Image 1 (spheres, rainbow, N blue to C red):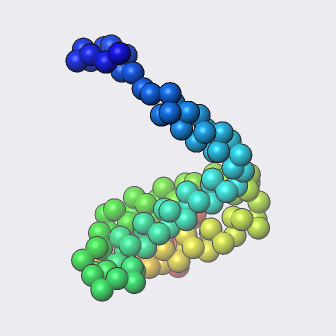
Image 2 (spheres, helix red, strand yellow; image 1 turned 180 degrees about the vertical axis):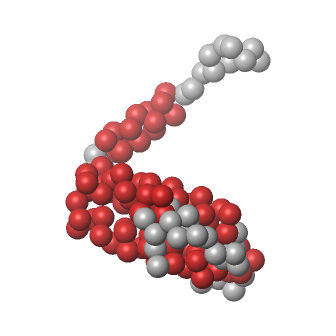
Length: 128
């Protein structure tokens, strides 16, 4: 049953409910390390694009350092918090990627941040 009243229940076909249930079962089978590393890779990729490092011809048009700063800081928080849980085998490459992005941000920035004040450096310490 479906009505225009915003507080009423909207009927969802059983197929849609089954699809959601399948998605929940699917995600329940994914190890935490894979979820964490996938999220980190997405943050890295987005930050690289916002730094103008995309392989596209219009890479410089996509550059947005304010957005890059936010993404790098979120990545630093995730990597720092997750490192003890995922182990050095998984955290090491994520830290390397994070550091590369932090250094690329320093190179792209017109006004340099003070040491320890760059994106994510409150979590990682100063990057040189």
